[in-house]
Image 1 (cartoon, rainbow, N blue to C red):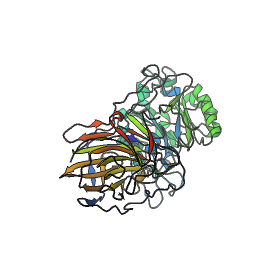
Image 2: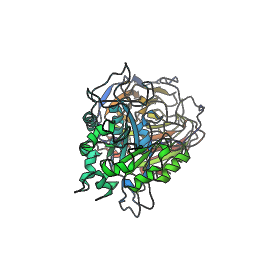
Image 3: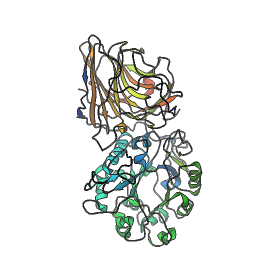
Image 4: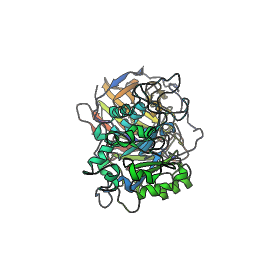
Length: 569
């Protein structure tokens, strides 16, 4: 078996389309269609077999085009505004897709010690939900949500700073739910050099007396470039003055603030307002405001500190907080196509916008190309899709990729796939590993012989009650010569390290036409897919990133498409 040494990244984006049913039958569940294997073919159903692959994750071969001829920006976190998703765990879009597709670099998690009788406390971990145990969540425990963040970091290691607001819904408790336990939980997922902590700010400003002095006195906030590839955590949940409050307990009223992993981001109140913090609570440099107090963001900014305003769910509230100078614009409106007013990313996909005239890079570091397609479906005996491929010959290959999808307000059966085919024709024998655009899990689709029907196969990917299966985004396609034909295997993964086998299929012919495919499933509007860091290892060779320029475009079954470099056309 060939082992890939890289994880690929496929950012699959789909433009909003009709919510109604599409005309094709390709949305059938596993095994739909007659799809019988023809002469010379045999099939083995995937059993959910788990394998581990040691991989070097992500790619840094792309470049960031800085403003002014590629010059690196010296802008700081204080100089920019950014979208911040509110109650991120209960949105329709999984955490990974919020970051990869919707260009969000600030999320929120609500944590509880327990979750009713069926979910007893777990030492060193917390449950993630809003108010009641039955409230929806895409990642059930803090450790599960952190795994999603880790998966994104491994795919895009040079991302801009990602800020995670953690709302403490219950107080600190005995039995593994103390501040030190929270810090340990984060530390099990991220190393110190992957975090921005209070001590990071102090180290960046030698001689600073306290955090406020480090960012708004002796020094200013560090540059965005110095925080690239890192995460910052900020705890919310009440005020920061009373010693009995959850936030003061975390920092022991400030005495241990510099030793903690997270910052605290209190909500100022009457009797404990911004002037009180500025007078004697100099360990607080981030504030958290409800929408009716958005105007206070201007006062926070005047004091050299950061602010977040939450629940900005209409354009008026968003504009008010934006104008007041809030740095983090918290909203439930994640989908960038459905609510384009609730975005801060640039035309090149860079996630932040400047106050005034600061210079920012045009994009994050990544190797990305895209295709915007109008087509029918990849299904039945003939495909309607755009194929970007090359003829690799009758050799063994191992291709890995990552697929990020919009996960809301899109035709759910539009697909982004890794494919291996007997030919470039619409009815060619084919093996595809696909992530649908919404609601469905990664699947394998098989056309065993030329002109045969298509079968689909799915397996559970994650353990139950951890991370929802439709949040898994890593794909892997292995093709090995077998006699005069080929054997193909398709896998899915949550993290790109541990893989679940979905399907093994033997073909009586080689599968030399390999690459990526995009299908709109009959959407009434074009569907956009972005493919980045697609990595192939040819047997006996070294892993190589697949670039748009080496792929030939075929428009099958009446498809019409435009291919482009970068994250946006």
